[in-house]
Image (cartoon, one colour):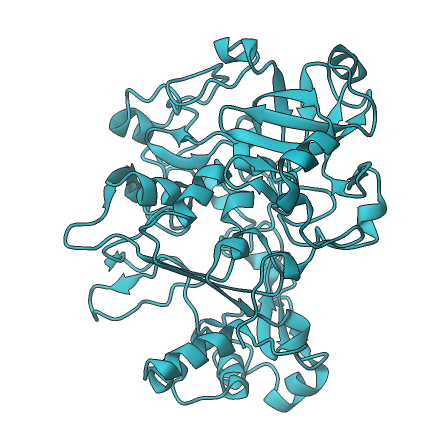
Length: 501
């Protein structure tokens, strides 16, 4: 892309970015970019404060203002287990999406000076152990004596809910009134009045309502809501969205959406990075050189000894943080390389309980015990060498723990490689050690991208696979195999919930 000429007509890269770069998209621009910041009753974490006013700076969908600072204490999501289990910890960068480039070279520490450690967890996205690095360590952190209380709120009984002291049922989007904006296309941005389709099921409440009820108990309801109802905040969102002069509230409410029209003189605006292509000296990029950098001057300056994130990106077989290739000494004990992707049949752990998709052989493998196991794709040569047949129940393991799966023997996977999607519902036989549900993220690598970068490295790692006798496991762990289970939908709420009357 760079060698063709970044910004050159016919040689541009098109990326539909919902988070920003609205001024550099190569498509015709709309007359406005809708913004619902004023109606937002929550904040992206970490929350950003404006130095000038000392008040929260609302930066949802906008670049941070100069002079913004961050909360005194926060933890990157993939270091939470380390923060709880092995403090103090340090890392570089806030990890906030719109942070300045220089922020990734700033060192932070937990616990921050003068701040206590975490003692309570309140989660509305309870999927740490399924989606992040080394889920078994997250389980140990959730069960740590340091964590005195955990509250989870969610529409589904996803994995971390099983470790919560209280689980509050959340209604889904089709049961709530809301306002939203779709700007992912980069051109045809749409403001939507997300009207309720059905009344909330059972005793479920929206995330917002739950926060309001707790705020009321703490005497903070008026401060949190600003004295406005949900419908009034939706109206505030519309009136400050940028489209309020293009349509009326009545028209928007009746129609349910508004498509932002394309600017009439859109052809007069430069396309994407066209100015940079035509005159790079007077229209520089935000790199130190102002140009495309195949060699990162910032990395060379700040982290010259980081061999896992060098100034020039290239293939690195192993490093001080990671050694999960088939060339590793560890491969003598764990000779198969797992490929773990986002699943075809779900989004992380969501939708893992849909009865129709669970009938697909690449979604679940029905075991002799009637349980639907997560498929493990394995080449016939590797299966044969281990005495594994198609449909057999297998154990996938390394030093971090083990998960069970159903063998899907196929030529569609390379020899020496096995494949299991991430995101299966967690069903512990031995919590933190052995999982029946196939939550492969429980045994993914623990370390972050490099000693200086808090990225996750969880898509390829070493394991061994062996066939197991499910009846032997049933006899050894009878209680785990007696938990309520629905073969069509999977785990049942009764298996972990104790209703408080």
